[in-house]
Amino acid sequence: MSKHFFDFEDGDFAHTISDNMAIDSDGDLLMRMGDNMAMDMDTGDVHIISSWSNDDEDDD
Image (cartoon, rainbow, N blue to C red; front, top):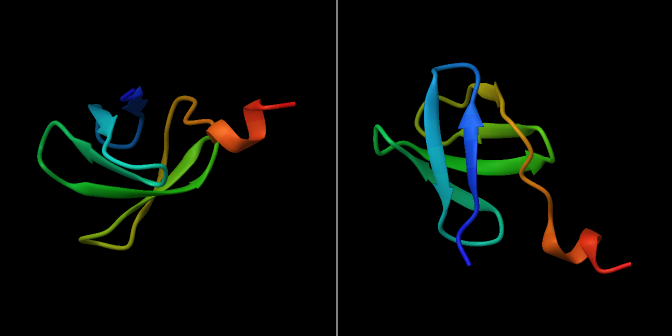
């Protein structure tokens, strides 16, 4: 199931396409670096995002 989150750096919503990759509403690829951090794959900029938790960590 696809997860959605908000990118506070550029004001876009993003949708996951795999466990650690997402695409935002502008078509930019983001790679998960943490629950609240992602890297823009085009620019290398680190973005602060709303929660993007890892499913593996949720299985306690």
